[in-house]
Length: 25
Image (cartoon, rainbow, N blue to C red):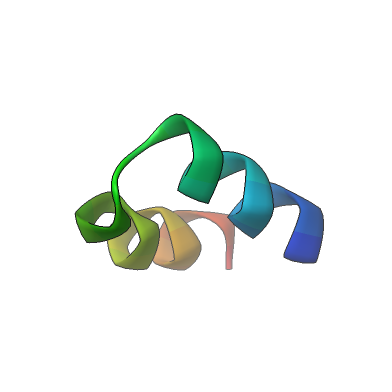
């Protein structure tokens, strides 16, 4: 999950970090 979270944080703004984290979780 750490890898996915890092990828999303680099790919999308911080605002998208939370929703994407829920999607990956």
